[in-house]
Length: 370
Figure 1: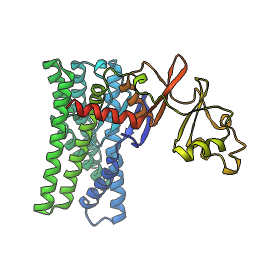
Figure 2: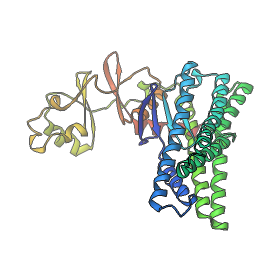
Figure 3: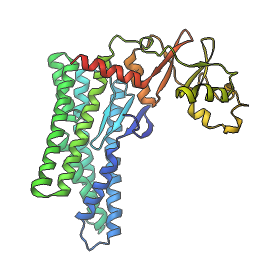
Figure 4: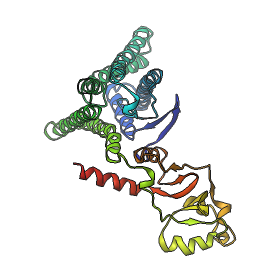
C-alpha cells in the first residue's frame, strides 16, 4: 500500500492509516449533525461531529495498540499495522505465530470491543444526571457506534475478529495456514461485496442515499482489507525460492565521485531518463545519487559540482544482501517506500533491485500459477 500515511511507531510497530479514514470522518460528522436536534446551532453540531470522529478514531487506535501489546507479550513480532476504520491489519508471518495464539488474539479483539463500548456507556451513566446534555449525548452515541462495531466484528470474514477466529480454527483443523488464510480472506471479500451490493440496492430502489453510501463504504473498506491481508501470502508464494541476487538489474548505472553533475545530466539523464545512480569505486559501494540530490543544486553550478559532493553516502540508505529472499525484499521496499535498492555481496555492489521490475515478476509468476 504505497502512499498510505505513516503515523509513526508505537511499541516498535509502524502504524499506517488507511485512506478510508478521511471518508469515515466525513460520514461520522454528517451522522452526528443529523442525529442531534436542530434546536442546537449548526456550528455546534459540526463541532460535536468532529469530536465524535476523533473519539471513534482514538477508540479504534486504543483497541489496536492493546491487541498488538498482547501479541508482543506472547512473543509475536508485529512489524507493521495498517489501521482501517474497523481496526488494524497486522503484518505477521506464519512462522511467527500459532493457531492457538491467533485464536487468543481473535477472542481478545472481540472482548476489547465490548469493553470499550462498555466504557463509553459507563461514562454516559455518570454524565446522565449532570445536566451536560450535549456531552452526554455524544458519549451515548459513541457507545452505540462502538457496540455496533463490536457486533460487526463477529462476522466470519478476515481480517475482522470473527474472520481471525475462523482462520485459527481452519488452520488448526487442516494444518494448512495458506488455505485457512485464503478461505477466511475470500469470506471477507465476499461479505464486503455483499455490503456494496446492499448499498447499491438502497440507492437504486429505496433512494436512501446516506444509508446506501455508508453500506458501500463499509463494504469497500472490508473488501480492501481482506485483499491486503492475503497479499503477503501471495507474494511469498509467487517469489518462493527467489533471492535478491536473482532479480537485480546488473546493468545498473555506476558512476564515480569525480564525475561532474553537468556531465551526468547531459550525458545520461537527458539521454536515457535514468533517475537512480550507484556511486562506487570499482564495485565497492560509496553512495547513491537520485533526482532529489540533483534538484538541490542550482543549474548554474552543475558543471562545478562533483557527484561526491551531492551523493548520499553509504550507510545512510537501505541496501539488500544477495542471499536475502526476494519476498522479504519486496516487503521492505514497500514498507520504506523506496523504488530502488542496491544489492551487495560481501560489501561489493552486484546490481540494484527496481521495485517496478520486481512487481512485474510477481504478477507474471502469480498469473502462471493460477
